[in-house]
Image (cartoon, rainbow over all chains, first blue to last red; front, side):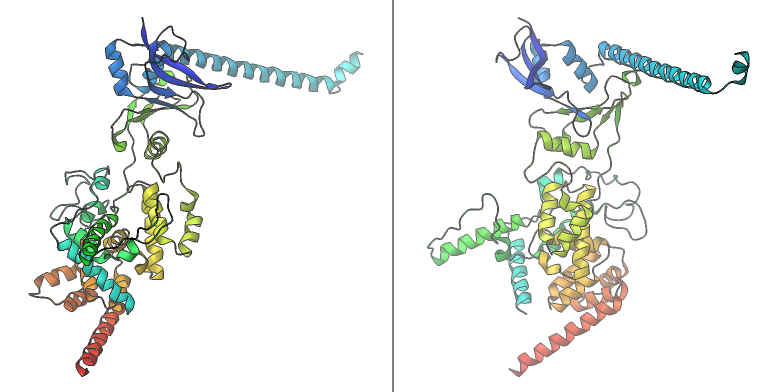
Length: 136
Length: 366
């Protein structure tokens, strides 16, 4: 079977917490058949705006030597930590988020501009205009 | 008078133990070895050590001083231990703490009692191991990689810690990936907090305890809790932490302004306190206190310590030139040439001499 270095989701409702474990790739994570736990990842930022990742790198290297393969997301995390080169998905996700942010900012600006122009229009309509009265 | 006799006995005991073959004068090696400031080569600290023993304070140059090298000199350690003394009653004073058991009562012969007393004295010397006095640690400023293309991926920092087994705390790798994509080594503050989370040490809190905030610290000092503050600072901080240095130096200054030097006598903080005053040239009040107690050996030891830590000072040169100086001559030379409060020290010397003469004459009359 495929030996993997993967996340196992623990924690509770609305509070995820991942253990970084060595186990069979297709097994259910809470089945209890974890070969070894080699770290943890807390996806919720703490008071200092940090997400804590702990990895036992000696054990990680040992299991990599046994032929365990990290999953996509574990590989991404290790890339961000400097153990692996940065995963291409990290770059792609970052780019996607940036474009989304830029789009949101542009939308917000467009919305503000239309609101401003609408406000100016309203002001113009309410102001008594001599030419209009004259035409009527 | 009773206090000075007790002091003399305590000093006597520690000198006996120091000179015995069983005890080797060693600074707290594990503590010393774990400090990052100290390196084997004397080239660290740059160009300020030419023509002088490495690390000892140079009066003329103004480079960053490293008290650590002076503190770990064996001669300095011996003097500090002698000055600290060994008051078994104080060292083995009952402290309400976790694991403090009930005292044992045993029936022993004189010989057995002597053996137990001896082993207790050696154990007490271990309790008097001094926390080293070091310069503040240099901030960590290393960037491992810059990846601006990761900007936007995370809005929070990612902190990675290596939890491999059997790695000393100081050597554990802790890195931080910033939201802007920079991968850098964690700063000292981040390191301390993260290590405490994953490898908690007893007696430490995450973050600064409120006791060590400036106002609260002043309250504690006014209450006279110097030993407690220093003990807690030792367990909370690393000894090269700027916070530890701030707290300990403030405590020493408070003791100095109130003259309560004897509070720390026969504790492990007495040595570092004496060293602090010697290194920063503030020993006048101390010297006067020792002379008032009529402990001549302490006063001479203090001046000798000053000469070791500041070898280029004027009184050191004068004493070196004298063929066989008596203790009073050594102290007198210091008072004349290097004391900042010259008149105070000289007055104290005169008072001591008078007291000596009067006691001699009363003894003669008997």
